[in-house]
Length: 227
Image 1 (cartoon, rainbow, N blue to C red):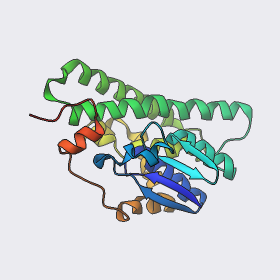
Image 2: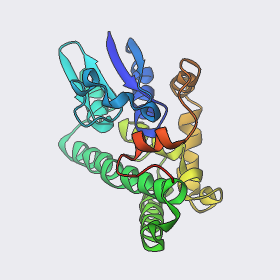
Image 3: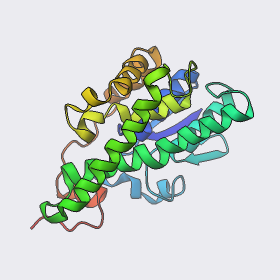
Image 4: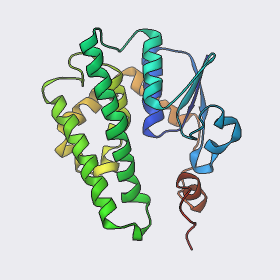
């Protein structure tokens, strides 16, 4: 059985969706990052980068959510396009989510919601601009097709879904008004039974909700505790 190390943030949730779509048996192992459980020495043997998600699949360990999606889809032979050209397109858009959507959305969240007030307006404006730009590229891509790669649902849509759930928190409550095609994709995936099963992970474990000094030290280790 696959051991799945997770919390409820966007990157683990995209893996949860993939596991559910594939019908693979897995054991969810909560890692409460606000409590610092990602720094446990035992977990460092799974992911030396001290992030979630990660999986242990028999003798194979994989960390980074998009690497896990590729591993799982390749193992099952599903949700991957056929043909060299289509595979190139899939890898391009998957990495667009991995290196653009995810990091810029994450930094936008950090500077909008969690950074010290003296962090500076430039950083905030930079990440809001880049997060919005990346989401706009994806929205334009979806303007004339139901899924990112066309007619077929794939791991790219799963990767985008993980972050699309958070768009209002990333860019503001009015963001979907500017991103109607992203919202349509989100609604389409949300309606899938696998997505609804993935969301039930919220009921399995009570993660720490407070963003107190302990959580800030564990989530943003370079920050000093508030005076």
